[in-house]
Length: 351
Image (tube, rainbow, N blue to C red; front, side, top):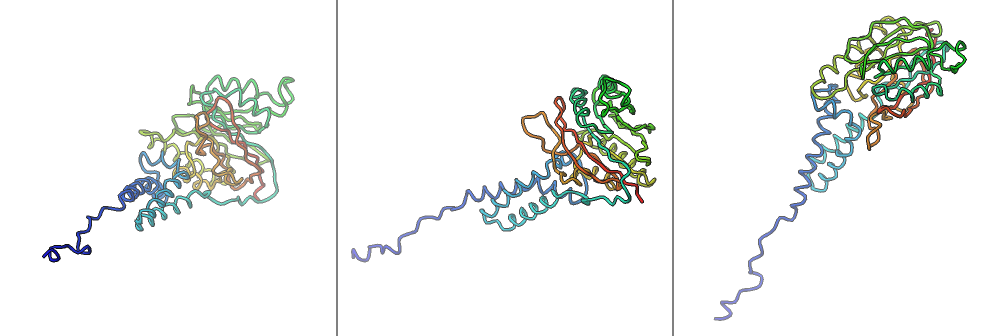
């Protein structure tokens, strides 16, 4: 009887199974969240649109979005979510592809070199870096200087320090004479100036909240279009204005291209190669970013004065096919939150 009531060990009830992978479910959720932003931003880059806020702001970080995309892929693989892992890998590859420089790596300049020149583009941040700019110009000796956020005091200082014709003022370095200028008069961020060693014929400034002066200069016997770009930044509530102002810059570049004029377009564009509005400027004028041609397309120029290093290149010198780029350097000017761009160029005859 006792044998009949005995329970055989093999027939004892097994403990209820527990979920062995709760942490991997959390990993899958984390992977999905991590890949969401790179998906949206890279998708807009693929569709060639800047879209509404917050996409224009996020596009400035596009190269850095490879990090969350890569982490998402690893988490999804660890959680054995194959579909999610595949999506994250696809987004990672697309993001990495778009970090490559935009546009060709050379110009089609023809004919002999008719002029060698240096161009310096600088945002002096409400005039605070004016003295540092004067020192840089005296040291580097550019023939053209594009200055954004140059208020009246800034213009007066630059004119007094650099404006003498070489050889006419004993107190002026003969290599830094920039006696010609076109100015958009304004205070704070609204003023701008182009300083030149070559005589200038002023062109109407582009309609914009901040100064975007223009001029023509005879350089090496050729009439060259000069334009300073400084559109509004793409902060929330003024993205549409940013797009409109960059659109006017693109129209100016297109007009120079139709006229067959060499063009030097430089300044603080408040846009990187990842913004469709900036690429439209390049495409409309058949222009090239000098930094891209010099192998420095991703060198960041802003912001300088934070605890973190600069992370995005928004200061550019753009050139038409009539130029070849000899060199590009980025200068730190104390007082400014931007790095200045110094470019060595050769202007060709074009025939």
